[in-house]
Image 1 (tube, rainbow, N blue to C red):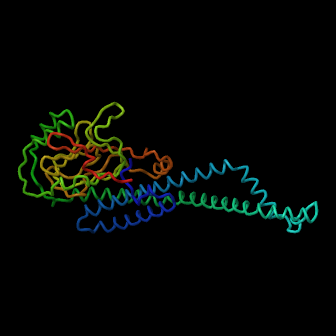
Image 2 (cartoon, one colour):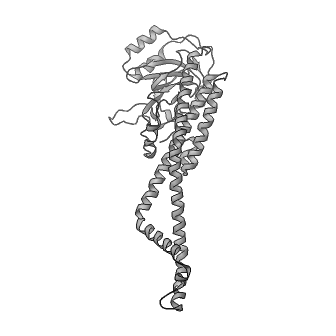
Image 3 (cartoon, one colour):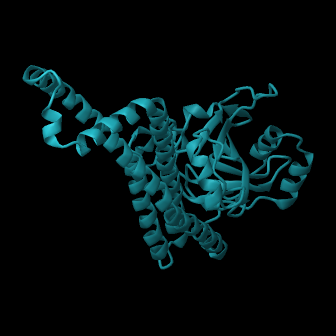
Length: 368
């Protein structure tokens, strides 16, 4: 199940149109990156720029995948019709090279000539139609090949621009000092809880029971967002709530497959209750969007912010792991369509008090 649909690319069938629209978004993202350098809130501007790059690159990959699939289909059709096409080309070439008077002569005289003319008059439109179809397919094949060859520069610029935006975002986050704090977690209590926890569920349950101090900063009622929360990352749903994996293990959350270095953002204004490595889950970000509620995001490669900070909806929480893809890794995967390029996974869980709840009741999953 795909959870992202840039340009509604999944609904498009024309690969050249998809690629052109994607290239346009990548160009717009490049302009946005330049403007973000002077923006008052560079973090927000860079976050939106990274989203634009990610969507543009995914859409361009979709266009190239469609182009490769269409090219393969045309070549298969050519192979299956090779004999017919050869005969057609032979007939057309013969007709083109033969003098017109010779075409009008027939061994049986004027009657035979008239009859052959009638037959030729009936056959010619069909031959012409096949010739036109062949010409259109050859032109389309040439266009698809040119599209794939010309994508290299666009891909290089888009991949480099996305990486530059991520680097700039990391610097902007580290330079930021004005974020409000709702409370300060006791480091000793947090460390004790971390050392005594054997599971993610145990840590999250213990974290919910820790006392809080200052609650002066208001946060919107989290329950108002039920059913409409955006997913924190663009990707593909691998496993749903309590769905067993290959080993038969069930977990009370979603598992989302993402591209390397995808940006992870806050779905709702919230307080950071924990950020950092936890057990074998990689980097974990735990947000408190409302009293008695926690949102858990596990599997990040890098996390932003500090415990106690209040982040707004859409604020960057971190980046997924992996390394920046080069064009060599990008193009070979464009034709398979199997999602093998989504090599990172983000685990998402929502808890109410000590109990997990089904995230599907909270997130808006109605996307292509």
